[in-house]
Image 1 (cartoon, helix red, strand yellow):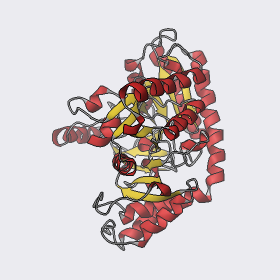
Image 2: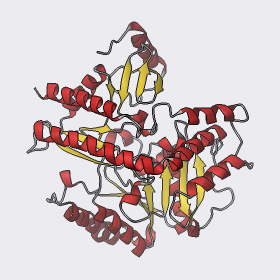
Image 3: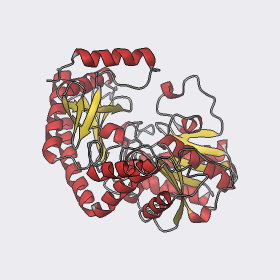
Image 4: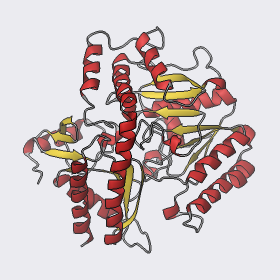
Length: 437
């Protein structure tokens, strides 16, 4: 059982005095260090980490020794190269290495500091390449919190409240067979209905394709609830974009970098985007954003975009160490991801059968989730119950994070030992059983 001492309470009290309100969870987790499968707080409590620190630590909490050594070595040389004004070799080398992980024809990268900045870059590139202004995104999407990316985001009103309007963005319906808005639970029927809505409404009644620059989407919708779209939907979305001269932008900030068992989640669907964005785990724990575009789209005008810290050498060193690890262990990671995903989904499936409060389980690779409901028939979201489950997990040594309205994401590091995955799932099931009573 986790013990909360006065030191933890004092830090939280000080935090609330000097910092703006953010999105922190209700449970009192004051982190101090991490190693492998575990995170530790300042009281010495140890937790199994089912959050990968918001999808950042794909190969263990605090990365691994290779990443840490790369960071330390670079700090002793130079941290900030003013890369977007001067030249530096290591960002070039990393870009060359990264492009080998992409389909043929991708050859241009823009460096930034975060996922939301990578989306901002993609917005600019889409407008520059197409000379058009309108963007299509999806309800439930989360693409960031800066003002351009926020226009694309539609995960919940609290994120956008009081900050609009957001011109030049229209939202479409993302296929969610569990909560379909089209009176069908069949995945392919749901997919076609969503595509029809785009073609017969948005592109026929709201905006001409001549005005639409890009469709932004998440191959697996993250903050919206870890929704895995039907394969047919992604293929049809690619068709719609291609037929109408619209760019397809895949936001792989959360789903990329091996999280789903492939380097890009799009690999599961058999089609390519025109522009990709990466962030979170690709930096190995350091802040980085990457926007990757097809070479034949063109180049950017001189001076059209820049950022002081893009290409930061410490972030690039960490990202390159992470990429080297991924490339060297790719086959092993793919195999482990399948095996561990089967383990997780089997246990979650058993919970689905056993507990009335569990409405749906879903996932792709190691990007998995469980949705809680008050009643399986009505599917009413169990919002308070979810908070109680996460809190109970915390006090029993398991870190988890919510997403969607009443969903809990399960995203342990890809390298987590199976025995710790089992322990974490035991803690989760015990919490669910107690909350349901």
